[in-house]
Image 1: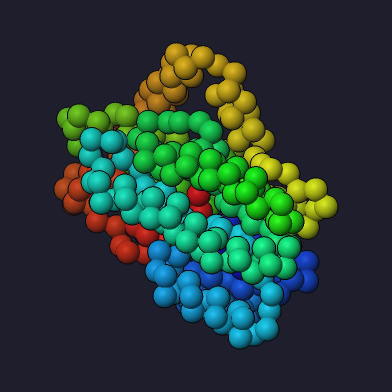
Image 2 (image 1 turned 180 degrees about the vertical axis):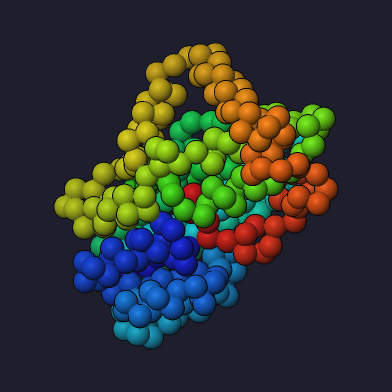
Length: 312
């Protein structure tokens, strides 16, 4: 099994669960130094950047050299970058598609020929409930996950005649570093900024883990998709993800939109009250010294934050 984005959160939980099932597991991530504990558990850790063709080739060459036939691929690497559409640089939007869509498919294309020849193999894509619903301030992220929904369905039908299966996992809110990375730039606008209020509301929603699931919930669904005699096409976890996906399907657009606006306003008021009327949900005054210089989603995050394997 090959698991991408394995250095933390959902990816780490997936690797651990597969090792407990007795699989040979290759754990790939850009931050190899953060996977030493997985190596201690028996994982074979590899440096992997799914947006780099040479990196992909090196990983697959290593697996082939080990004499291992790759029967399962878990596409977990990805990240969420939040911001209003007017302010997110197009370069950052492209970067999200490069990681969450094109990089994922580049790796998948390379493993498919071997699986097809052996007439066995399972591909599990870690999508998001964001691929079936929408919220403002996350438009580009939602777009990448909507794309993955369509690609997963098309790939499943194309490869089924060769004995392959494709499943899509749709995590909801999960306790991991993902939300902290995604929300950080949303807390920096001064109160007079044009989108400050809607950003405060979204940042507060991302910070609310009261109903969040655990990475282990997602890992359990992945194990089922890789081992069950009849894997499901989709797995939405935790329960709140299933509820929100159902409500988005059920409600007319105007009703969903009204609910979203109400929720954002509620969380924005709560954030303001919690901070004595200030604008930052992190506490203190939001200003030029409180974080990234730019108020848009890309901000001045470090390379590890901006392009890391924060789970989708």
